[in-house]
Image (cartoon, rainbow, N blue to C red; front, side, top):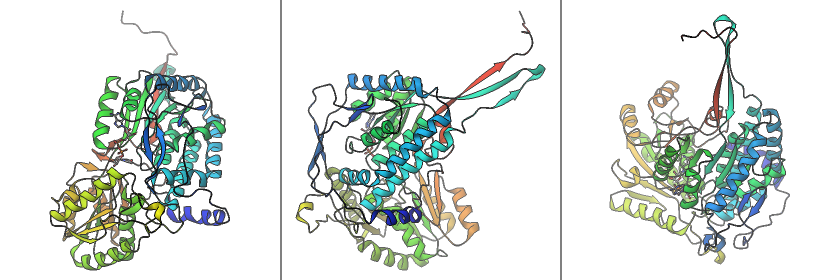
Length: 516
Ligand SMILES: NC(=O)C1=CN([C@@H]2O[C@H](COP(=O)(O)OP(=O)(O)OC[C@H]3O[C@@H](n4cnc5c(N)ncnc54)[C@H](O)[C@@H]3O)[C@@H](O)[C@H]2O)C=CC1
């Protein structure tokens, strides 16, 4: 889930090193309201007791989450409707101008957003900056497409003709997961707004903090009040949005079971959905690969964001002859991953998102051991030396050897830093085993044989395939899953089709030729 890594790092190094950091783990308390509609931060109306939101790096309570009820959701949707009235009538060029300013504001506040993301999510600051870049790039990209939206002219007999108009859908709901909170809000809102829609966005209740910053920045950029709104809450608030009669579309990122429920709810209003769901993606490493790159690719495929990435290539199939060499190298480098305070520049792996999730990931490692996998490294609780981090949710990244296809660690999405390594002999066998899953979000292949590379990806049943790299997500390129990993796409030109609808207009130039 990265923009092009190298090119994103370089400008940052040039501009940031001179600036002072102003946040540190364990020092932030958030008391400002985290909802946003009609151009302002808002508290929820109901008197519901708050849920604790934790700082993963320290285990401290960061803030309270007050769930939005029907009254709040109605206010947010009404505010979106009034903005839609104005925004949908603007030309693409006019919308683009505002989106470009929003992207510039994000860039100017990059460090602040990234630090808040780290505090709320636990990922390393290095990764959080790249997420903010991806959000900014996505908004820039759709600003560029906003003024290209157009229809078709079709000539018909007798001089009659038809034309098509690409029109917005209306008020769209965005529902996000906790692993890329700011980036998901941008990936959903950028194409929606570029097409002339308004949005009500609900972040995950685990990471409520940064979506509201995006809402403020859109307003600051000149977007009409109500164009992008944030309502906080969990399942209940999500359901209110999905079932709301003024919501025209639901775009969801999250787990497969929730995705199914979203689809059911949307079906009641015959609403289109975009579903970005989970994965258990395969990475195929052939013996003719560049091993150095394959090892790097496997690490990128498994350990970004503490392994909490939907597209991760967690089933690493390695051709038998190079398996010992591959394992040795991958284990050596995994042990070197710097774990600790996610706000430190040297940290490469921060904390998992919360305690129940950490325990869940650790229980997968235990289960793998029971089923006969060999823990080559990691898979244990990690307690940093710094005393303020002692209650954080850290674990050592884990490589599992001696894995086989029927093991739970190979079948189920763990969503943590756990790589399962499997051995294979032939291309046919690897393909068959790689595709033997209900999921199909991503897949990768490392080989120097260009014909094999393309042959293999042709047969991989996955929406996003990588040749000789992994987890790169340039915003110009569509991203989404096959099979139960989802419906629709985010990013790329095609997403315009998922946030707009075609109107056909028939124009008669002669007389009505009536049968009656
Ligand atoms: N394909 C993709 O692009 C991505 C997929 N994911 C998937 O997301 C999952 C982890 O994220 P979680 O936040 O734990 O997923 P989740 O499915 O529990 O929750 C996702 C969002 O849906 C909301 N929600 C839960 N129940 C709902 C309901 N009945 N109606 C409406 N909204 C509801 C939650 O409050 C949250 O905002 C993983 O399975 C991962 O693979 C995560 C990131 C990206």
